Length: 453
Image (tube, rainbow, N blue to C red; front, side):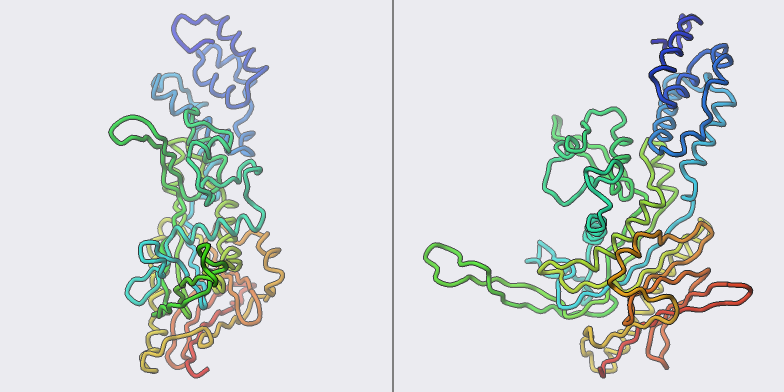
């Protein structure tokens, strides 16, 4: 096959082109065009399909982008003309279309008489920072992936929606084999990120045993969507409880053995997830497939649905409360990210004031009331079907709020939002405003704390 050296004749170029036309795909054709001699490019230019034909296949776009980048490293840029530069420009436009905004997700959820996240180094006691419970980001991402599974959206049988880290104890090389890949696969980053939705979202590490001082080698990248460790807005108390085991231990035992658990009576936990288009573009240069809006939306839906259905012995009684999703421009990102911290601070202040006034009585589930004003309550029964629809806002920076009030689950969309704690009403409120026919419609979610209940 011709490789673009000076000794390749015109007939050899044409022969290779005829073979690629029969057996190659669009990417092969475009790559051939990039490295062929000028006379051949002029002859076959009309036979090259428009690059817009790639828009239905993300993997083709990334493969072309990455392969051309490698070609540049090997041969320099002299083989390029204005047509190819236009292709690269279109590729970046297509691959990043509707993904050039930051997406910020703030999530509040309740934990009632359970262990939000045990620390193996501390006898599986809840992870704490002082009196605040702090579930790890790994636990939160795992909850989202469990939700994806329960929604039926991921699995090894799904072409683009397998999970690289599924919770199964398995060697990376064996997991690759299960996915139909090999560690020495050319462009492994590209194929793995194309195959696994969690790799596209969160990144991945592929380690292999081998020689050398470290005894292993690895490929890795940081995903464009990262999750912050959770923090409870209220101070918690940890309760130690003895429990009966299901069976006796030992042949001579005539009664069941005992175990123990650690539980938190109540915790209202806040976490933040951020999608960065800057990281997505950087990964693209390395050949990593970036997540689509549908991928990011699946993370959001999985997080809500996964939290709702955590029914294991230690996690039973988790409940999603509030989710605020914002799509913001790069210019507004620092300001909007600060709002996530301020949301937590103002809500925590309300809880602290209540505890101080009642001589530090610990807040429990019955003290917290959540009310939704506006929006359409869907009820808990229809929530799975509701999650089938996209919840990510439009590309113009709108806000979407999901709230589970006492009357059911509501979805509220608007153009802007505000929040704050009010001393006179003894509540924390987030309000969403939407402009409709020159009128401003306002909906609100209020969280109040009443120690007299």
